[in-house]
Amino acid sequence: MQRFSGAARRRFITFAASAFGAVALGATSLAVMPGAARAADDWPQDPITIVVPFKAGGSADRMARTLAEPMGAELGVPVVVENRPGGAGGLGATYVSRQDPDGNTLLLMQATPYLANAILVGGAPVKWEDFAFLNAQWNDYAIVAVHKDSPYQTFADLVEAMKEPGKVSSGIIYANGGHLQTLVAMEALGIPDANVRFVTYDGGAPLRTALAGNQVDFEVLAANGADAVMDSLRVLAVVNDTNPDNMDAPLLNDALTALGAEPTAIIGGNITGLLVPAAFETDYPERYSKLVAAYKTVVESAEYKDIAAQSGLGSDWVGPEASQKLIDDAYQALSKLSDVVN
View 1 (tube, rainbow, N blue to C red):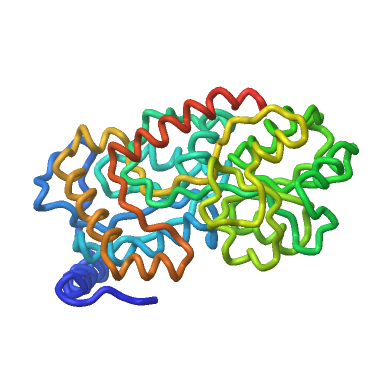
View 2 (view 1 turned 90 degrees about the horizontal axis):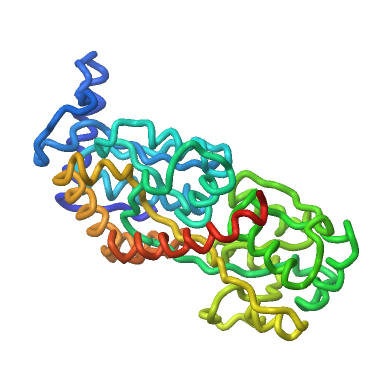
C-alpha cells in the first residue's frame, strides 16, 4: 500500500515509538477518566481505535484500514482498527456508544442502511441521535444482480421465477438496504415474501462471495462494493434514480413499471464514513474540530484518493453538516419501511 511521507510520517513514527515504548516500560496509562477535561492541543495522546462492526474484508473494514495510518500521521498517535462483528452492525455500534465520548473510540460503518436498520429492525439498544456522522465518504448505489451463468437473463425473468414459491434464493444481511429493497419490490409486484428463500450473511464480503460463487440466485447489493466480483455477475437492474456508470440494465423503477407495478422508494446502497458519539461534539468541541480537520485533510489528499481508488473505495469530502442531512433523510425513509420486516 502507498504510504504517507514527509513531516506527517515522521510525527507518526515518533509518537508510535513513544506510545509503544511507554507500554514496554510499564508506564502509567494516559487515558482520561470520564468527564475529565484536556486541552485540545494535548489531545490525542493515547492510541485511537476505529471500531468496524463487521468481520474483516468488507468495504467498511477496508475503508477503516486505509484511513488508519494517514489519520494517525495527522493526529500524531497510532490509529488501530478493531473488528466487533455481530447483529448486522448493532453490537459494534452499541459498544462505541458505551465508551467515553472523548474521541478515542470511533465507529466506521454504513450509516445507512446498516446503523439505521440495527436500530429500527435489529433492536440495538442505541438511538439514531446517539451518533454524529463526520463525512459521507462513500455513497454507493445498489444493483439487482445474478451470477453470470444464471438462467435469468433479465429482471422480468427473475420476477417470473420469484412467483413460484421456494424456487429462488437471495443473499441478504438481515434488514439491510438490499433486503428491504427486495421486500418492497416484491410487495409492488404482488409476490409474497415467503416465495423467496433468504440466506443471511454477516457482512458484505461473505454476501458478495456467495453471489460470485453462484450459491444464491440473486442479491440487491452495493454496486461499487461489488467491483471485485463484477466479472462474475450480471446486472439486471440499477437501484437508483440515475445510471451513473452506464450499466447495461434498466433502472429498477423503470423495470417495475414495465411489468405493470408501481414504482417503489429507492432506499439506495450504502453511505459509509466515520461516526462519533454525538456527545463528543458537545463535550469536547475543540477535539471534535481537530478530528474533523484531520479527516478532511486525509480524504482530500491526492495520496489517499489514490489508495482509496486502488481499494475500490470512495473518497469524497462532504462534511459533517451535509453528510448528517443525507443520512437523516435516508433514515426517515427507512423508518417508514422498517415495519416491512418487523
